[in-house]
Image 1 (cartoon, rainbow, N blue to C red):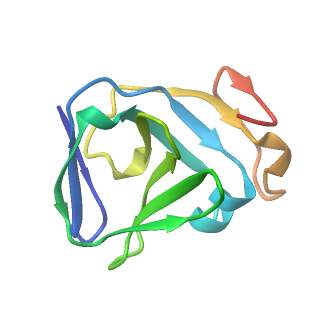
Image 2 (cartoon, rainbow, N blue to C red):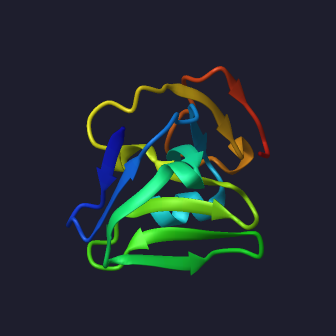
Image 3 (cartoon, rainbow, N blue to C red):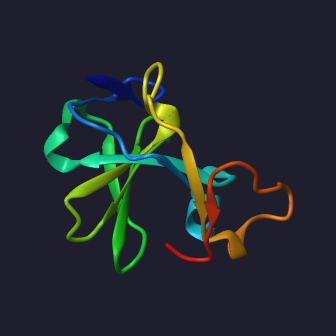
Length: 127
């Protein structure tokens, strides 16, 4: 089991299963929300248990997905595609070791001009 939380502790959770390798998303929405690209892993919804969600706010960011963040401290926490049985979790909000690795980069054509894309096994211009 792994645990995670936002910066202020108003959202905390447990992950009771395997995590997907980390993907770095360079899409415009992720860049606007984080100020950079978003690095996220994912797990099955059935393996994600919220232990505190007082601060959890979901924002409909597009016609296919929503984003979860803490309404108190602003921590970016989740991305959820409509109809998916998995939830993406920002790698940085997981406590301690994630036990995973950077697998690749997506939406590379939207990458900012202020950084270089490095690491990972692949690069795609879409998901």
